[in-house]
Image (cartoon, rainbow, N blue to C red; front, top):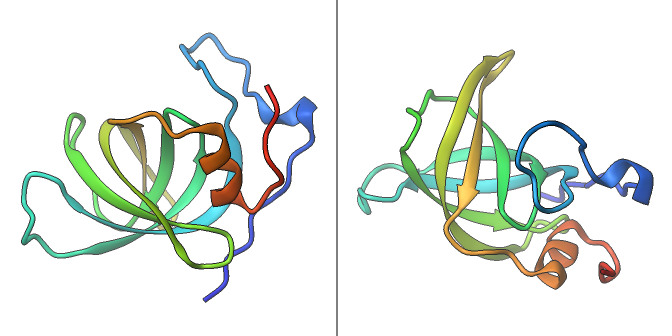
Length: 126
């Protein structure tokens, strides 16, 4: 299944808020396979990455996850191919229509080139 991602102009890449963001966020709709990180035999559950940055992602999932939970995620690029694996710590979760949005902070920085490849964009500058 191929999922597409929105290409953003430089003026809309960075969300400027009072929060502690250190990298631009990119809106997208990418597939993710997830499971609780501390339970390797726990069932997989699917998610949709709705935005991603070098430091984390917001993922739409069908189940509520507690703040602090660690989630293993396999992220698929805009062409639908597995691109990278990350562990994310749930920083916040909120109910939305169709499930829960969990904001996760990655355990390891996602390089700019990896973000671009994940999103199907040309290499990011800066």
